[in-house]
Length: 218
Image (cartoon, rainbow, N blue to C red; front, side, top):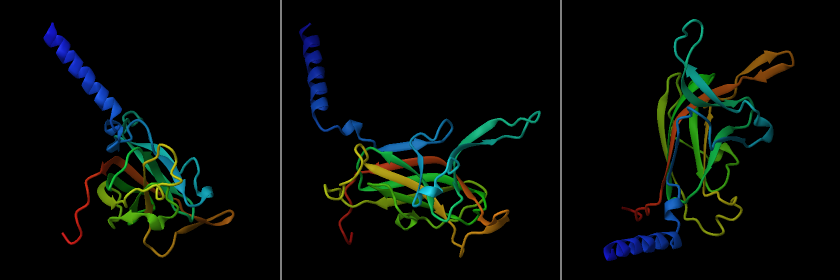
């Protein structure tokens, strides 16, 4: 009985220490989504408010070969559509801090975006322009391709974090851009119109790394 009491007391003490110490266990160090059920944390964004519409970010499904005229949903993915001259992106706010963030995902061209380059943004507030994004400079194709972008972050200070929304630690956004000289246009009843460009994004995996950076010149 004494042994049981000692073990019980030790467990209670350990739980108390963990509860009263820094909330390391609650810090989110990773996030993933295969988009089979929902877009979850991801929402659309743009540097121009009018560029965000209900069709900017949608959950879509690839289907297998139709049987009796009906195809079964086999793969969900996020579809990002740009119908505007401004950039659009999908973004998620994650809890935690990091010295660097690795963003892995599969991407492909869906409509008029062969050769487009996917872009990644990581910061402590929402992006405001595509110039803040980083690329791996691998052009999109009609087939899924894996992309990995790692972004280093400066040390977080009170001044650097000022204005960040409560509960927001890291903001990760995925976008794309075309490297040609301009957007294609098509004729419509009201004159030229910008062709919609669409890409698919799947199997997103985000890793927050708090490892100390290596010393300079090493």
